[in-house]
Image (cartoon, rainbow, N blue to C red; front, side):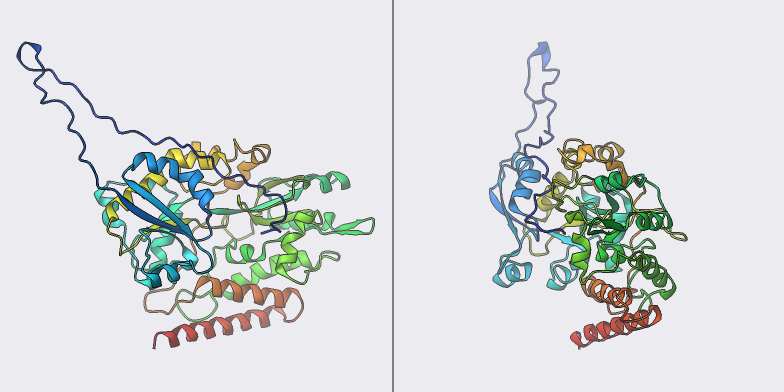
Length: 446
């Protein structure tokens, strides 16, 4: 993400979401002569004992949680006091577990599902609750349900997908295109077309070097157009080196353009766009992305690559998960259902937060009530459907945390793009690194 000293692009969804009320059907036909016997009157709901439910979400501020969820939850569940906590020094999930302050609900994600949830013996399969409450999983984009089921390789459902997810798009600086008289990029472009455009936009503006292209490197590699796994699902080492060769070569050519050489760090590359020094930037659509207000930007769909599906690569959503230690699992599931209902996701979408639902009306509402997004081409976010989840390791094979895998692939690409290694050498070294990571994980289990 860009420097947080800049003015924030995103205003998160507003509070005051209205909960759907449950109404009884009162009144009957009455007794003889029209006298009401009282037998048809709705029974008063049994008073529920008050208690506190602890909800934990790493990286999500209390202010965001309160704006998006608290009002609805407190109206729907007046007997529950919602204690919300987020991560921080001494307050990560492992710290809470160590202190015996285990949450009832945790916001998990695929990169940390094992280390921050399953390895702590907190996992709860939500399938029985889906059945019990007749909860319709078809309302979600099937990619997101399949992702979490595939990850554990046992078909269990350890969470339900909560917005946002982070589709990749192509940002462009309108002022730079206007200044140099070059037509804006369009939805549906290929990487080849984007490359030609980046060459036109790489030029000197007086003494200032304008770069034609920049990127969120981690996002472009991890969320690649082939939905390609880094660690092979069936054996130790790098998966399908031919496809990784295409991914590496596609990105490297942009940095081979004179004047658009790869900078010293990935952060520097990503920050170029926010400084007004890059005409194009391949990055996530994220309400947490910070772009200075003086940058006159817009977006188009992420380019597609020959041989790859015409789908948008993305970082998937987070998931609401119940903990094994919770004494209120049924109500925790009801709380999840409430936080994922259409009304809340519609308000999220209006503020620029992509929905995890299939609902087209909610998808089309993206950014419509946000002061900045409503002026942008937000249809670019869903121009293509989300790509399939990356294949997961087969049962019996030791896995490596995704964070470690993406660090390894990013380092290999930097060696290649900076000239420290040729393509074959960088991929061979990546293969060796992944095997080392697997062996390190095996040694932890001895």
